[in-house]
Every structure is written in structure tokens, then in C-alpha cells.
Length: 639
Image 1 (cartoon, rainbow, N blue to C red):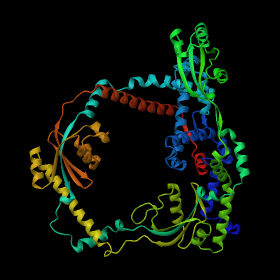
Image 2: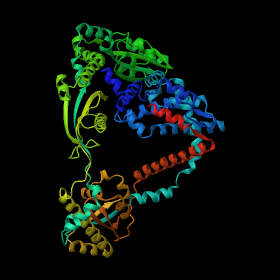
Image 3: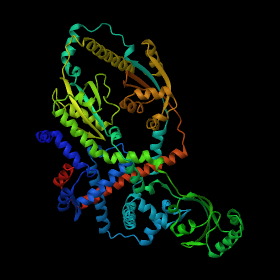
Image 4: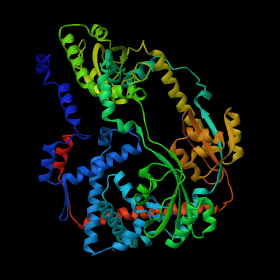
């Protein structure tokens, strides 16, 4: 096996394997060597400010995590790289540096009290409308953000607002302009449509044999059949293979004891709280509670209190100042007074659900699955070695699959896009990245050879190319019917375009259009009511016939139809031919207060965003920007 590896070490797939090993150390696989390189040479400079590799890497990682969270893991780091995430993140860092340089140049500052007040107004940090320091600290810890970092970010945000807001506040469009724009977008126009489908076009004569051969010779490229490959694929699914990993009862018990806290459901308590603005009121309430008066009733007896049912909660869900007090109380008891930032509260225990530890039998299958996965690395590597040795010894791939009880699939034919002869994806039950990797491997092999074991998405595979059918243009006789159909449709398309053009030129009124439609046996429909606003909300259209028509219209036709004058017409291509559209009438404009308010807010938001971007660009212009493309390329090449 080692001899085989040495022989293959210069080939592309081994390089991919090594790259995959390196990549396993991190999402982007950047090692200490790259970090050292980046530390010596900044990614970019703007003015006297340098953007280090560490700063770039940290921002990049945060953006990757954010986008993967938004997409629920559907977007991979590789796809983000292909979409240009590196340039996007670097651009954001340069913009931020330009803003900070401009803020420093203008000596802008924000006071500590303004930063504090701004943080205190954030709803996520409030409990019953009041800032809760414990909640604030807990949320920061949960998101792995230090208090200093958060305050610094808030200060930067306020400084940016202080710099940008005065400069863009006068850039909003005048109300009269927005009113005209709203009217243009929401004004309803009523259209009549005549459809000219190819199915209605009757040719006077069928294409001659000479025409067919001429079209075939002139358009051979469109009849080119892609290269197809027939292959065998052996799959090693980690999730399936780890079922064969042997475990002992002692190993399972040891794992259970080691992580017993994770199998323990913590104690929960149903807690109610009564809060007062003064100690005297709280003492009065506590006296009544200790005398047996129900908490609900006390809210009526002692004015100024706020009753809160905290529900069934765990210890870490209650403010730290009351945590130990509340979880030391017996059922039905009321706590002493807890003072938290000038708010005086008493807590009452309505219910207790004691802590419960699940028994080994209840979690055994879960533990065994985790253990098998932990031990699967050595097991699967040993299995791969055996497979390598078997193949190197001349055992056929099908026999290897049978011996080691692996899944084998025969693919009768597919192209470089992974589509079969019917245009359907092969191996469609596998993850997309795995399918792409299998197809890529297959199209880099010679006929009669197989790939090494490759890994992608917890799946290992071997692909063997059984047969290669090169790309070729079929002989005319083989595809004559297809050529006939193409030539016929082209002629019908030309006839349909001429008919639509003639009708558009000759129709000076709705009566003319109706007459020409009837004469040619074409379908005419009226009263399709639309606004430009509707074009952005097609899914909300109630009229199904109008929705269907719009789905077949080209964007060019839609643009032109809204520029028509009364009883003017235009034609354009559709999915199955052409359509002639005439403006039937324009409905009276109806002002909608709610729609107008939302529209004006959207326009202002868009205007502010554009002006902000222009301002940042101007700040960048004031401070020379240099991007070290060599360093950038080096970093990207290591990923």
C-alpha cells in the first residue's frame, strides 16, 4: 500500500488529499506559516492605517459564520470563496478604516454617558422594560463578546452616525418627487392581449430535404452530444460503516460516568416575583406573604408593585442577585427582600421539578453512537488500507465492494455536469459536493482506471470509468427528425413575428386589434389590470390569467407595455411565440396613505444607503488605499 502511495504522490488527487488534510485544521485551513507571512506583510493600507492578516482573518471568519447561520449551513466556505467573500470583507475593513480616519481628523467624540444610555435602550438587555446587567452580561458571554469589545463597537457606531447623519440628512428626495414616483408605480393600467402561439401558425409548405441538410451543416454545434462516461462508484458511508465498530459495556459505562452532567436535567422551579420601588413597600408585601396572603392578592393590597410570573425556569435563568436565595427556598415559601439596582423584590416558589439524571439504559444508544463515531477514524482508515491493498492486488472493484459489504452503483452514462442522457442528475440522493467530486474524478480518469479512495462530506468513494463515449455530432440521418422539428419551428417563429408586427402596425384602436385577432383565429383577452408596483409583487396578483400572461412575457415586453399611450400597442416574444399588448385604459389614481408611508420610508432608506456609500467612497479617496495583492493571493492560495 505504501509503495502504491509513493508511486501516486505526484498525481493531482494526492495533492487534493493533502489539501483536504490541511483544510481539516480550520474552515479555511490557514496555518501558522500563512499567519507568519501575513503578520509581516499587511493585507492592505489606507493612509497610515494598516489592515493586518489577523484583523482580516478574524473579520473573514465572523462573516463566514454569519452567512452560514443565515443560510442554515446551505452555503459552504468554498462557495463563499467563489462568490468573492475575501474581496467583500476586505472592502468592509477598508471602509471602516476610512470612517475612523475621518472621525479622527474631525476630532469627533461621544461621551461615556451617551454610550451607556444607548446600550440601556436595547430591548434585548431589558427585563420588564428595565436594563438588566445580568442579562446584558449573559448575552455577551453567550455570543462570545467581551463587554469592552461591545462598548467599543457601540462607540464606533455612534461616532459613525455622528459623522454620516448630518451629511445625508439633506439628501432625501423632495416629497413632491416621491409623490410623482409613487403615482407612476401604483397607477393601474388596463391592457388587452392577443397571443400568437407557434401552434396557430400553419406553414404553406414543409421544409425541403435540401433545407434540412443546409440547416444541419450550418448548426452542427447545437447538435453536439456531450462526452458521456459509464462508471462504477463504490461508496463508503461513514454513518453506515461505524455501525460495525465494536464497543464493550465497560467503555459505554465509562463514557456515561464521564459526561453524566449532560444526561442530568437540572432542577426547575415555577417562580413568581413581586417588585416595588421602595424597601418599605416591599417589607409590607413580605409581611403579608409570610402571614399566608396569596401573592396575587398582595398586588391589590400594596399599591405600586409589579407582579411577574417567571414561569418554570432553571437556576441560571434568574438574575444572579436572587439566584441562590430563590433556589434554596422550600415549595410554597417566599424569599427575603432582594435589592437589585434600587428595585426591591420578593420571590415565591409555586412549583418545584427536582433534578433528574437519566439512567444508562435510557441514553445507551446515544452514547454508543457517539463512541462509535469517535473510534470510527481508526476503523475506517484500517478498512481503507485493506481496500487499497485488495485493489493493488488486482481484485476487481465489484468484488472489493462485495467482500467489504460496500454499496456499489453502476452509472450507465453521464456528462461533465453530472447529468444522464435524460438530463437528470446522477446520484441525486447524495450531497451536492459529493456528486460534484465524483463527476470531477470520473472525468479525470482514463477508460478502465479507477480513482484512489476520496473523501467528501463524511463520504468516501472510489470511481472506475468503464467506458468513454467522446463528444460527437450525430450523422444527419440519425437526428433528421430533430432537425426537421427545429427548422419547422424556426419558420413558424419567423411567420409569427411577421404576423405580430403587421397586427401591431395596423391596429390603431381596440376595434382594429379585435378584428385582426378574429381574422387570424387568435385568442384575445381584455381587462388585465396592472401597475408597475404589481410587477415587483407578481405572486400577489389575484387574477390567475394575468399572472400566467406575465409569467410568459419577456422583461423587454413588460417595460415597453408600460410606456404605451392609450390604444397604442407593442409586441414581444413569449415562451411559446409572441404577444401583442394594447393599452386599453388607465384607471383613476387612488391615493393609499399606508402604502405611501411605507413607500416614502423605503425611498428615504434607499437614498440614505446610497449617499452613505458615496460618502465612504469620498473618504477613501481622501486617504490613499493600497491593497497588497501578492499577500492576498498568497493567503487565498493556502486555503
